[in-house]
Image 1 (tube, helix red, strand yellow):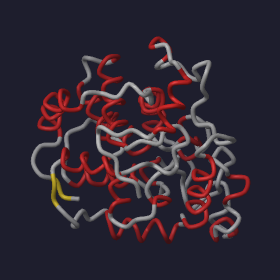
Image 2: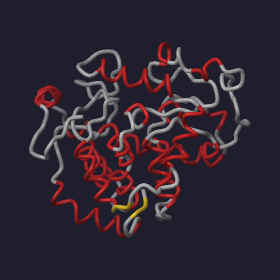
Image 3: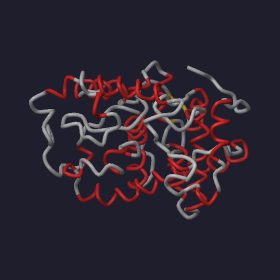
Length: 294
């Protein structure tokens, strides 16, 4: 695992991002003309990305997810503030991300600032942008990245084609041949609601469980963004709607709105973290005060 200081920046990424020369007006538009986000077909990071997803799709099963909930959802491992947890992301590069090769702490502030410019009246939304990837600290607790990062999907029912690399990477997943887990709805009743669905274990679910355990006051819209922002087969691929209830469908546009900032703020224009920290500390104090249990 590589460790970066805030003054260092991988040369490969700097060169690649300079090629983009993104016009600021394109920042929140899908697919800038010189670059395609979420390109899983080619590029300098694609081999690393595919290996991460292959391991994920092999080992993420109903049994595995239940074991991870039992281990982490009780939030008994340590106590620290949100800012302390966020600072740990200085040491993490997401091995499932085909777009960037720099620490996740930069991305947290990029996302938050993008939301702040577009939604200045929604401070909770801005905070969600800052917080959304903090669950990735699990990768610093000896959890493999395939159990922390990447797109999420339900377990206990059929793996849908919109899942990244789904055509080849589920071949060794034992649930793929299970007589119940391999069916369309699997262990779930139609329209049961996503809150009743077991998602593949990762940073989304972990952070959601932490915030819920600590009774943070982020509204439902924000909690959905945190819990399902990596659920691309749902909010972008259009799959798994048969498991959704009315609340899920009401929340879907909020998750999609968040996704614009999560994805399209990945540029080389890095934020001035020291200058921004007091503002976001104020939002943390409002919605997630005190030291949290993790």
